[in-house]
Length: 537
Image (cartoon, rainbow, N blue to C red; front, side):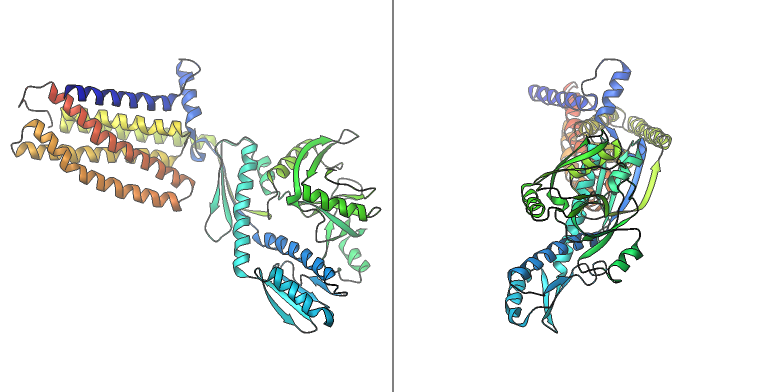
């Protein structure tokens, strides 16, 4: 019996040391300041404690649908040429209002069967295809495909934003989808000291594309329309030039289908041009480089435009065949802009633009007040519980107090090992865990009292008290953990923090209330004479 008790005691002490190590880690020194810094490095403070920026963004998923249908439109134009359908063309009647609708017109009668067969073979799984008058066809993107594109655009936006923020060095950022069905993303940046730059990096789609120039430059939009008989040609778009030179503010008419799309950029790095001005050097993927080489080889002497975020940044004349490398330059690019642009291209382009719906900034002074009040509440609650247990249960109260303190050490140690982010709801979870720990001890102690009143010996009363209270403790803890799991699945960041803290605190409480507390009782009984009463109030 004594040997078994020694083994249990060694196990408890080992667990205690392990989780103390999780709290303080390996300090750089033994001064209080060094220990405090080590704890701070292991347990990060959330937005509500350290201050920072809270953003809610909306992803314009319709743009992702338009980009996908643009790719399909390019394939349809190629198929029409392959089928020999001279005079046939494909356009998007309403690119903004109905980005998933493509219309094919002008199909020669003798090529109608070939065109229909090509459309059904390649696009029937993605589009509903309807024939119309004069051998025309309307392709409408299926609702399931459209929803899939929107979902992927939202998830890709979340991943891209997180990677961009992470590379900027923001500690413990929270980036998650917010509000099902609203296409919104929640971003929380604890302790951020440059929200302006972060916002610039987040909101830029960094959709870099290379387009064929069909006309321009024009001094303004009316002049461009007048030069094209009042209507823009099919599959074209009019974009403003903003290259930081004398031509800024002019307009160019471009082929809306890009020669090289944003997904075909493999790498980008900040650099300088021949005059020492900042620019960005980019490298294309193998497929993108091959397509670019084919186009530039066949169009020497013509103009192409580098378009960034729906703005023409540079217009160049093709002097010779280009395969997989190029530069984005211009007098308007600063060193920081070049760094930001190269970062965004490396992390991937956002599939759609982003609108800021909400922005809140929490100052560090408010965070300091939250920390102080939260810690005061936790310490005050813990002290009140410890004193009550000592007063009400006498010697057994010491048992409960030791179990509660060990419970708190295990919980904080877990957070340290997980490098968890502590928020105000997390502190609430700690306080609730203390309450649940007291509840478990009260159940056990009251059951032991009942067994003693029934005439049982102290050893038998302790044994029966733990045995009968165990099932009730398990029931209460399991139901609370299930509730915490629901909060974790459907809650946002701070609520998830509360759920995680509460769940691990309850698991630690099962260990301390059932195992540690019983070991202390057994050690106490070992020191007493057989039949000698125990102090339990």
